[in-house]
Amino acid sequence: METSLEQTLATDFDMITRTFVDKTSETLSMVASGNLPLFTSLNRAKSELDDREPIVDATLGVNIVKVIPNLCSVKPEKMIFLSQSSPQPLPAVGRILDSYMHPNWLWLTASQWLKHGDKDINYSFAPSYDESKSTITNKWKGLTWMQQVGFEEMRDLKLKYNELLGEQSERIVDGSKPEDDGSKVLPNDVDEKQDEKKDDSKDLEEGSLIDDEKIDLKNLLKWNIGNTIDDAEKNVIKDNKVQKQISNLLLELNELRKSRITFQRQQLAAEQQFYAQQSRQGVNTFGAGYHMIRASKQEVEKYHKLKRLISGLLKTKNINPSKLNLQLSKNYSFYNIITEELFLCPYLLVDTMVDMEILAQAKEEDKVIFECSFILYF
Image (cartoon, rainbow, N blue to C red):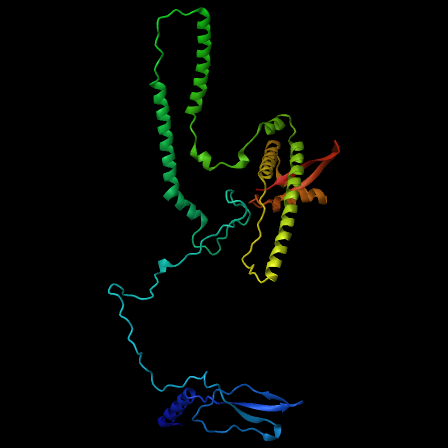
């Protein structure tokens, strides 16, 4: 049983041996075949007060070598802490805390939009933004913007619009009538004036209808390019040629997609070759990114038109998708027209499942027209 004195001495000895380390470290060396000297790592755990010699068997050919360090790189050990030569300057009177960081000053990770293409076009290439590390959702940011900025702008627009309507009505009411000079008027002149009055009255009626028509700002905010319907689409519905129009739109959309993807691949290969050449020259291309070519306006309009015709056809025919039991088509060329278009197009933001069946193939003017049945789940 060790006494308290022995425990104190052992503790002090351990503290001293850990503090005062011998700078001339020892290592073991031996000569291998071919007169090649080999050394072990340095023994830096030995203290200057420890005078015990290591036990090494000389018959093994191992010797003890002391490695003397470079004196310029070794700092002398100091037994006491030296005070600073110059005192620290006193802080300002109004400064209480140094290096203080309030939690509200920290940066919060918000969702970042993936930007590509023209800046004046909405970004729609999925995924549009990542909210996995965000503390503020995009919906909350939109509501905050509407409460702080959006509603005020809408109110200002309504006030300006009402002021313009009031000014136009005042101009119409305050308009002066031409004075009668009492001169005689010929019958031909009367007929001409009556015709002019009729034309003016028609113009005023048309202008009043245009002026009185109020613009709903909610419709402007909810406007979408897919809501525009042209006369050609109406005529197709009247002539009962919806399925033929759908087939034609699919073929046209496929050609536009092919040309866009081909150009995208060519541009990607050129950019990869350029970045490889830059990296060989020592230029840092870590932050270089590839630009995604967005779908053209014509391609987007055809897509929305096709989507509108298919959904309208399903509603008018009262088709229940669960009762059709359609199988995926094995036709590779036509299958790629649909699957690649729906899953690879940048403007498609919803998951779409397509079941299709080719009903008929007819040859008309050296063009194959597909009459197809589609089921879309949105």
